[in-house]
Length: 284
Length: 284
Image 1 (tube, rainbow over the protein chains, first blue to last red):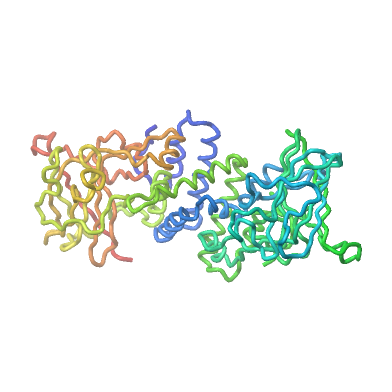
Image 2: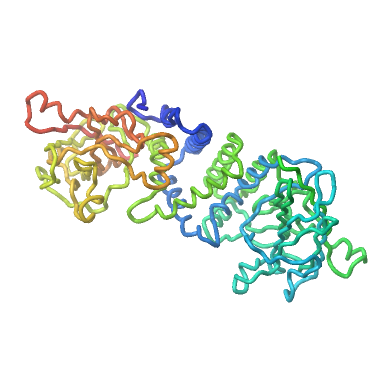
């Protein structure tokens, strides 16, 4: 589709680029491309990006490649630290009073974790404070869901996931459970610590340029699957963590913050405890 | 800098992310990051990007890495085909009536081309229609500039640059000249053809998704350096090329389009001729 002019200038370039999207392009693709192009051009205009800054930008983007591997995806990390991942999540899962809120999946989930029995310890021989977890999986009305699959994973007392410590292949602080007839998953583990996201690559440069830190508050990941219900991917955060108000990936939601120490402080337990009811929305 | 809330939602995420830019960050970096973050978030909201589309986006970005090599930079190509490069160029070099307009450098310039004498043929033994080039290098007032350095390079009659054909190391259709006392550079070559930008990678996918072609109209590149003047990086386009109105990288400007065939058609020459006066602005 020829443009009607032959001189591209500041004044007509954006219109010319948008005009090149053919009418027979996939409508959703066309919508997404048009918005991307408009925002990319508006960004360049807003900051009056100089050729030298453009070159720095090209060099930055070109440096991402080596940080995209089987074990790490810097683009996901960049999306996480810029709040883009949580924004996509927020738009997809509008908060509802009666179902558990969602948060980022993160990079540490594994496809085939060890399948364990209720009452098992997922962190035998791992040093740290003992934590007992009881998770009730229920529907939006609070009715327990038997036979739901629950993947759990978290960092150790020093903030390392199993893939980052030891030989990187052993499964630790990680397991797959199935809810009992009463909808409960019950297991023992160690209390996780806060930790930094990987910040030795381009995403770390962006954090540093903004004067931001790489820390995430301590949390335990849950991925719950129950027939007839929407998957729930979320974390439970430990209350009192000093990074709760500055999570590097903006994943925190107040409804997901739990005091693991409450019972111990009240003299009701000799170890930490996490009790939480997860409520899943019906499949759309 | 802790945020004042602990639940990030659609409503407060952008503000929270922007609020994390520390006051002591470099002011220009902070300005650029704030604009980038605002536009990235606005894009996600505008199109209500779904988690599945976000994942496709991550996969697209992750596939760029292998196309960034010594011989090719897919990010520059993506910037070119989306009009971003020309927009940066347009903002940096506001058009002035009395100086020659600029356009993209492109990926085919080489650092140390063969240094030739006026009257030389830069394409000996290359098949194609003979083209005689006379380029007058002048200042904004039209005064000839002696001793200016002029790099020229272009594709052959099939649209291939020297780095793309033969062994890829021989210099062809390429040379460095110095203007004579009368400000003129004079050389012989072959008439270049239109050609496609590399479209076997992610940038090609974007072109295809928009229903666009990869073609650029025939042109000759010039990079002029004269003491006391700003570098001029531009092309001269061959009038009548069928892709003149749909250049894949939006590089065309009417003032840079020249009829190479005019003298031959008028019976004044037995070969094609390109005569052009390049006017350089003074160094700022």
